Length: 369
Image (tube, rainbow, N blue to C red; front, side, top):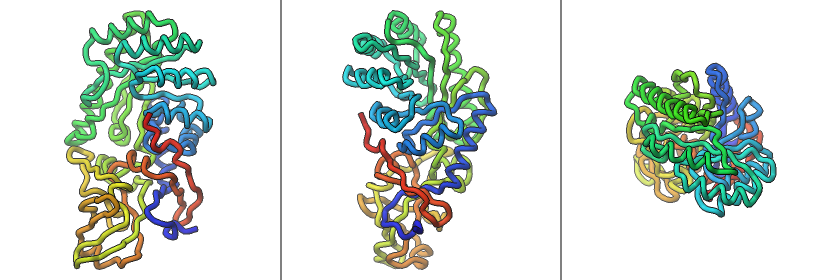
């Protein structure tokens, strides 16, 4: 079947581009003597996670326990929940995964997470490792003050069924670096800060087996990785998008597109596609090296961008595009941010050239808990 015979909208993945991205990142991790743990929140697809492991990745990362449960059910056995977890219901689900023999770990940044988890794990008869998140400039979650870090180490030390595996950090602020030089500077700071806290832990008598660091724009630009970082944890690299393409100066590595149909040409300039916010999101990147134009870019017309996304309509204001398409034509849209887009589709179509070669179940979609 030819991909352009698919009904629209449809999520399409170019296999050659995807495999080249996987090979690139694995080689980069190997070159820096780091293990690679891909963050699968990007694609939410067990079949792709298995390909990443087969190509050399050591386990996977997920964002939510629901994703971990699905990945485990599909045969992924080494899973890090790269997010803080709280709530006895959630810890009971983690315990159940550990009881099944899954090498499961999760993120923490507050002592109550340890005490609550320990109570549940003790009752379940399992011991589960944790990684402490270090805030490195993104202004999101993670440890900021040394005093809070020591308090958390004390809580882990006192816990019978929780053990320290290591630290992790994410320099999402690099997405808005003004240029590559600033991206490298932010990356260096993030790594140095993470390694500093690892030294504090070691001096406290709690050395870190894993020091995990991640952010696709830094890795795709092959920033220097400092000695002491043991694991790289990128996500978007496998599929890429307009934001990541902007960061590296080309869209040629973008493997994922949305096939859409032209459904209207109501004015001499305006063209309407049959996919909008419910298939592309309304997201843009509004600054820095990942800055994008519009709400998506047309693969076949890379100078043409979506002006606005309504729920079910993409609005294109481009006379050249308008004059070169007719109602019924199909085009492919490169999303600005692929991670939330994958969450909107039940399946993806893997293509080689024009041919559809596989249909992939996005089994972790909508797993928000």
